[in-house]
Image (tube, rainbow, N blue to C red):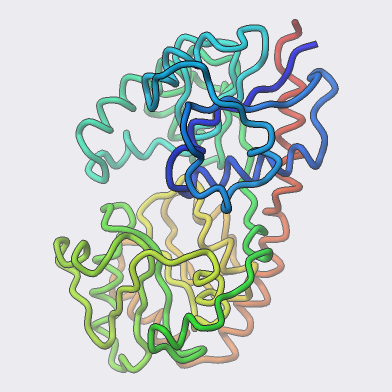
Length: 364
């Protein structure tokens, strides 16, 4: 009987959103139970120390063993991992995997490098432009996280038409996070009196538009607070400067993020495109009202439980922020609708979907 072997390369870098998906999905799959076709589960990672092990599920850390190879990064993944445990099925959940290995299930979260190449370095775009289509053709099974992402992967020729299968993300991990009760005091924020945004200067995150819209409000006493994406100097390089009504917090911990979700007037999520969109789902689990873009897969996540706007309509975003700030009954309705909406996006449900797909792998 063969095993399911996790590509543990992501354990060797600071966790990203994609890495969180990998961790939560595998932990939920192990709790759900592996399909009967597998004799067991393990993980292989490069040599060295796991980065921020306290943020990784214990079940994955306990199952992970270092590779004998001295290689790291892409070299390890493409050469050493390609040859490791050849009879077993490899599970690569973070957009990349060894292109020479067909006995593999790979998850590609989006086609952003093809749709929005300006959001990434030239080297990154070249690498993904070469590696992902090869991987999409070679791997026995390709997973993605939304119908939008599946359509994009097919549209840009990354995955053959009809091959990708959807496993929607969960977001209920946010409920396990204990909020850092000192977060608001540390940043000079009042409960229920700030608009929250998350992201980076990547053009598809569309924060420059959101800042313009926030600064066009007639009443700016409720500030826009941007968490993540580096410090204020990074945003200044992109033409976004901090002020009393637009504040940059820089990177925040999970505990700080939970406190921000719990206390924000609303989350503003203006992305031009997303493969899924975890922040709106996380916010909804916390009862935080959401103002969301109609770009990418965001409507699949939010449905009619958010105020939804065209990501290019700056005046519409201004009006929506003013409306949410001024209407407690609207905020209450959005919070209630959001909580109901995201009950479908649990890691338990995602694991059950993944297990069903794994049952369809070729025998032998």
